[in-house]
Structures are given as C-alpha cells and as structure tokens.
Amino acid sequence: MAVDEGQIATVELAPGENVTGTITGKGAFTAKTVTYTDGLIGDSVRADVS
Image 1 (cartoon, helix red, strand yellow):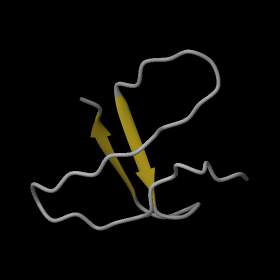
Image 2 (cartoon, one colour):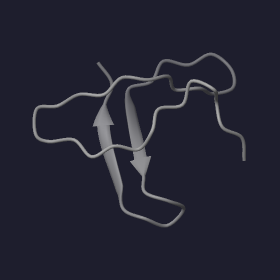
Image 3 (cartoon, helix red, strand yellow):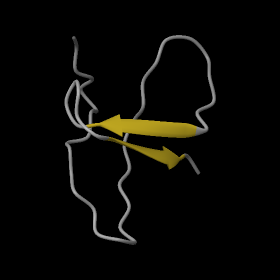
C-alpha cells in the first residue's frame, strides 16, 4: 500500500467539527460519499461529500 503525501491523519471529531483533505483515485470520478474505515477490519463511517 502507498500513502499519498497529502494524506490527512486519522482524527476524532466532535459533533459539528469538519476535516478537509485530498481523496485520490484512478481515473475521472465525482465522489458523492466517502467511507472511512478504522484499520482493515475496523468500524467504518460514511459521509456525504459536499
């Protein structure tokens, strides 16, 4: 696995807090949602992209 030089660190957010960063992928796409997973088999959280 590779790490993007612009990767954001894992953070815990309080209600109402936001985080910004870069999502990278191969090819052209428009993201509608992003899913964050804690480790390979951890819990995941899904968020709409605005």
